[in-house]
Image (tube, rainbow, N blue to C red; front, side, top):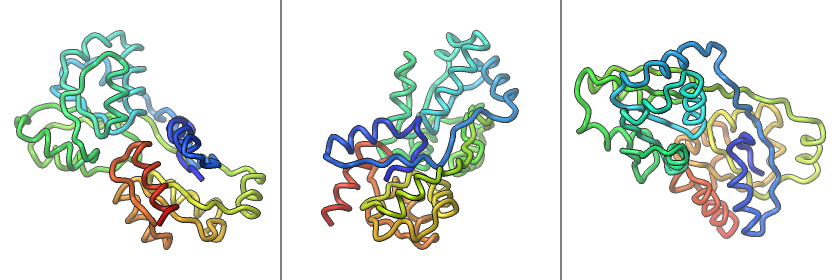
Amino acid sequence: MVTRPRERAEELCFLLEDEGADVFGLPLMELRPPEDPRPLASAAEHIQRYRWVVFASPSSVEALMDALREAGTVDRLSRVRLAAVGPRTARAVNGHGFDVAAEPPEGTGAALFELMKDGLQPGDEVLLPAAEEGRRELEDSLREAGVQVSRVTAYRSTPVSLPPEALELLESSPPDVAVFASPRTAEAFLEAAGRERLGSARVVAIGPTTAAALEQLGIPATTVAERPTPESLVDATVRAVRG
């Protein structure tokens, strides 16, 4: 069972199927535009003022690129240094023809700050287009370094209602493995379906933060992906099955 939003699940589902898995897609969150688009639009209009733009997800890349196209300022992004949390986010930046100046192997916000910090100067302006409900650790670290952070909502994740047939399928045929890629997704599953519909499924977490949230929710992870990538999630799923 893959619980990621449809926009983020396609590659993971393909790779799992390539390993011989029967994949049940159960998107529990929907990615939507910000309720107030003006801060993102303003950041796009004045993109050249920032020293860095820091992307935490592929969705934040796409949202800012859309805003830049709307503002007619895409070409100005080449004047700014770009950083990405994780290889998929870096690939999204590269896909639009831009280079990534900082991408940590670990694929975490903390690792990205460690990579960036020596090149930051107090007063530098950093744009952080992020999920409305996204984590704050990277933002807090940048602020503590004396950097001026402009955090703008690039998109928001909202829970979706599960159709009755999905609940019936979970009831009649619980998954052997459940893959969770965020704490909010795990919370949404429990709210929508309940713990009992997981049955005896092995649980895979995309990283330590999600694993900690799963532990608190009473569904400890069997395995944790080494990196927040589809490939690492597949490796973790294989380990969960074989373990």
